[in-house]
Image 1 (cartoon, rainbow, N blue to C red):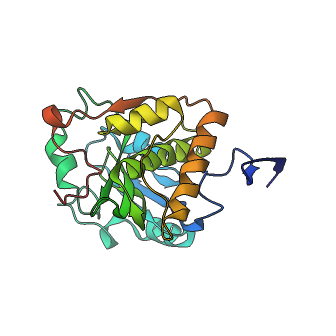
Image 2: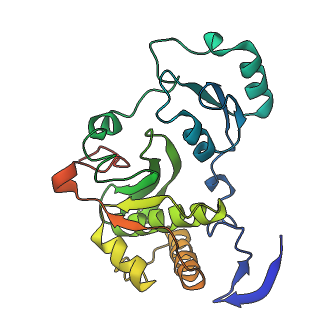
Length: 245
């Protein structure tokens, strides 16, 4: 990995191959998945969900499943789908009920795939805060961070949005749109500055470092993915919602 040899406010700047939070949280990167397609337009093993989706979307009776290692995927492909898969299932994962409700109405008509949604949850102001991203195609959780002490919902929603955009850039994916239901996060994203009123405490120094990294990433990168406001009143809760309201 190449160091660019410069710093901003004491934070070393890595190459664009890095996700903005990776130096602090190695676990932020989603684990590599391998996708077995038994029945689709092109059966085989793929290491990209986007490539997999292209081969199963719209294919009647498509059969596919994700695995955590290439060896597992190879074994599954050789054994066939009957060992992992019932005819009554679309795949082995439990569907996200919010995604299922939206399909055929918002998703596919107003919200075009590929697309991700992001959201945050916070218990108290300030309080323990966590955030996550969800794939609108199938409801799969793409990343989940926290909880972090002494945070706010606004901070979490901003970090979730930048996190998603950084992951997409790392994947060289410029086609996937990102949805947030937070007008504040959108404003901070556009201004490349988190205008938070959150006070620094002995517990939330890490969050402030995340904020600084996110602002720096936005200033150094030209975002090519579309970012949209999720219209909760018309469409219902955003699929990345934690369901704690």
